[in-house]
Image 1 (cartoon, rainbow, N blue to C red):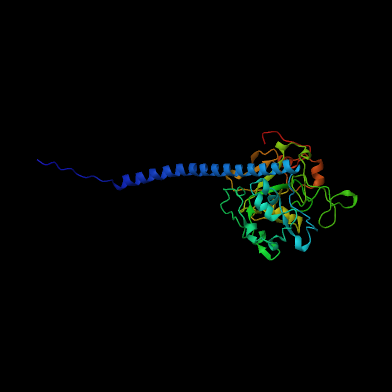
Image 2: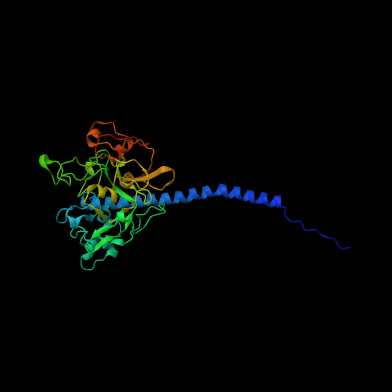
Length: 341
């Protein structure tokens, strides 16, 4: 006698229950996967900053001072109409970042950035060379060669040129002279009374950060401690527009701050696209975190909610009990912070 076996399929309700369970599992797993990916991207960004710090310190070991924020005179004044675009600190550390051949091509201590494309054997493509370690992986909208009109440069025979960008800017100042910072020099050229000249001929106090025009800062002048002083910070291309790696605009000191230097005059993670965002520090890391390279080579993540008083003038800063972030930016204000910042 043959047995008959009946085939029973899933009912619609059972199928819907299975789909719902799968959906719940995916919903639970997806945030974990995203968190793991962001953790990996943040770790990569940390390594980038550490390598930049190593290159800066190798420059200091070889030259006995940190690289200039940007080069002002080679020869002639950086504010001359044909020399507004000049070499930034990113170019000056190339020999110490495994890019010695590119540095030799640029020859930044003898050839002006403006003149470079017109020199023998040079080309604009050199200024579009991608250098490893200057892009934060969390910046999804990052352009290796910047296409934004606000970040193009005018060079000899190359008006509106696009050049290599970076997510990392050097620390210039914790207080302001005008608008977004614009502090320039220490030790010259000087005005009446020996104070440094601004580009308009007036005198201003020197910056209290690490980088400025023609700076040659020695370690001994970081009196607040290397582990308590910021050297380099992040800037997102989406929030603040990517910085320029090789060149900057010296025609207006504030433009230099917007292109390769940063200021604590502006709040962290300011409104995307604003002038404050273009001059300050910001990132695309989760939770409002921005990573900073300190002068001892360590990298620390600071939250955008850190104690921070913005838009303080030099005069006010001289007598104020500074906020935590201001203290971390200033190298010689005599006010330090504990290790739990």
